[in-house]
Length: 78
Image 1: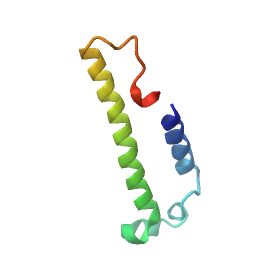
Image 2: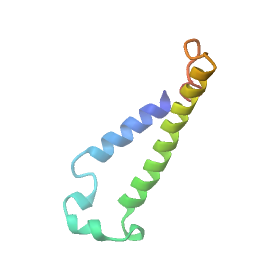
Image 3: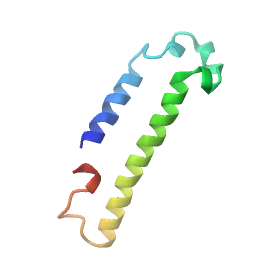
Image 4: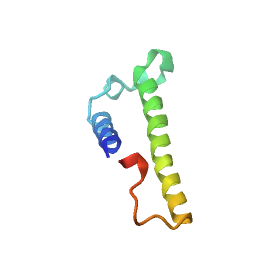
């Protein structure tokens, strides 16, 4: 549950208007990733978040196959 809260906070911070200078100056979107920290942060966050949610999906799939999906909470959420 803690990880889901972290994902929500990160998403809210990123979606907050004006969080990144690129929103004010769209020309900055053309900068390479090594000069644009928001691109590196976004790529890192995307990878971590995707990995987390895919792991939750995989756990649920395993529990459905083993018919043990009602009695246990996914390990990632404990």
